[in-house]
Image (cartoon, rainbow, N blue to C red):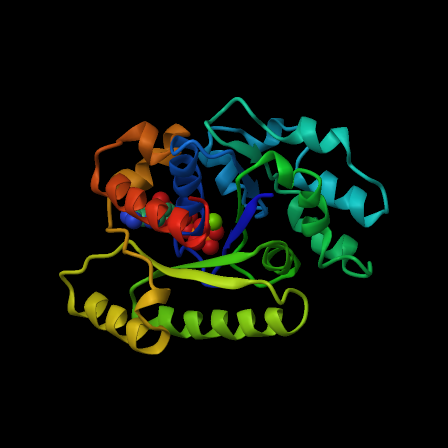
Length: 262
Ligand SMILES: Nc1ncnc2c1ncn2[C@@H]1O[C@H](COP(=O)(O)OP(=O)(O)OP(=O)(O)O)[C@@H](O)[C@H]1O
Ligand SMILES: [Mg+2]
């Protein structure tokens, strides 16, 4: 059964998609069977894999809509998953996904659609990584309900601390209701320049509030991480020895240990 990890932070541009794609590729390079679920209508994870969302005949949107209507996607799920672009598999998104929220909000199962969908493929993978949008709408809730582990990527700025406090509040709420199993795998500082006083003081504050165990090692700021998606490449395909790749390798080792993958 797959270990399911959601990367979430209600703050936009906090490194969710970059971390999802690169951790997925690193896990696949460690020999794991990995599925990335793009649950964001921006389709950035899909585009980062070199897939054009507009050309897709089927995506996460159609599958979730079928489930909301009481139909089982079955083979359609298997044929929607893209298997030949990367070492990991991708369940892609299209901009249509933005409409889902309105279309299924009144359904009883609206918050468990993704969980129900992934039940069908969880035996095919060792890890399933879910990339959710910044807003805490229905798609993010679906991601949090479907996952066993939560990674919160954050930039080390003063305002990020506010977002982090809100995310932990959300984790408690999800634990109390929809998903008692969800646990924090770690807070993941990204785009870090640890030479600055601000970054160091935010790290110190996170350690003080959340404990050393709840902070994953940092990903330094590296322009190569921002360039790679424009070529549809992960950092390990684009520049495997750059500091961004080294930092993600270290994080992947921690994930393999903490999530019981090894
Ligand atoms: N370590 C890094 N160094 C430099 N640039 C980075 C790094 N991590 C991410 N970026 C860049 O920062 C921007 C935001 O990152 P990303 O898209 O991963 O955030 P996000 O949380 O998924 O955003 P959204 O909330 O819109 O989904 C992107 O342009 C990305 O390439
Ligand atoms: Mg994103």
